[in-house]
Length: 158
Ligand SMILES: CC(C)(COP(=O)(O)OP(=O)(O)OC[C@H]1O[C@@H](n2cnc3c(N)ncnc32)[C@H](O)[C@@H]1OP(=O)(O)O)[C@@H](O)C(=O)NCCC(=O)NCCS
Image (cartoon, rainbow, N blue to C red; front, top):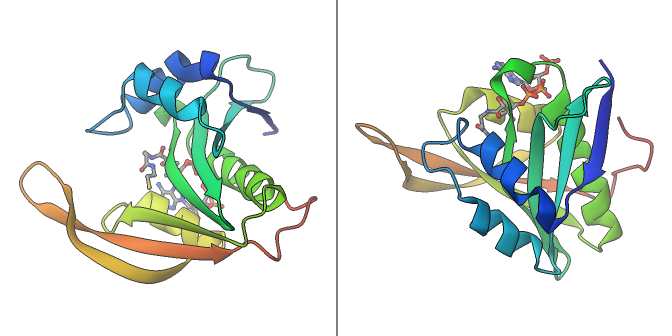
């Protein structure tokens, strides 16, 4: 399927909170997205599948001082495994590069297999670990810190 991608504005905060809610146990409220999107160094890419008007996923990033960071990423459960997460990340990498970032960091729960495999597919390497970083129902998961160089990101990468 093709994906339609567009840059978020603070007016998309409610949509982003709706998408975030079912995807994370510690979902962020609409106000958090509105406040983050009003910062100059923060941007988000929203994505829809095919001709669908409704956003089915987004990635929220920060890019400053030559470094970018994925703040959060999610795709609606009914839209997963269609390549949208990958498209969103690739587009966000291009924008971060244009904004002067040389590399991109992110943190992911070690037991989040879908996300970890997605990041590995896109060339992220594990560069660190934070013990018991994510509190979960009955235990705590380690966070992997992953990094990707952005120097090789091409404008026509898909
Ligand atoms: C992680 C997430 C964003 C992936 O979104 P997605 O649109 O389904 O991912 P894609 O379809 O672009 O997958 C791209 C690649 O990632 C890997 N991948 C993604 N989901 C996977 C899964 N459930 N199992 C195995 N590999 C998976 C595969 O390598 C896949 O390529 P392939 O389909 O050619 O095999 C989505 O599962 C999600 O929103 N999860 C809940 C929130 C979350 O964990 N966010 C990340 C926090 S760090």
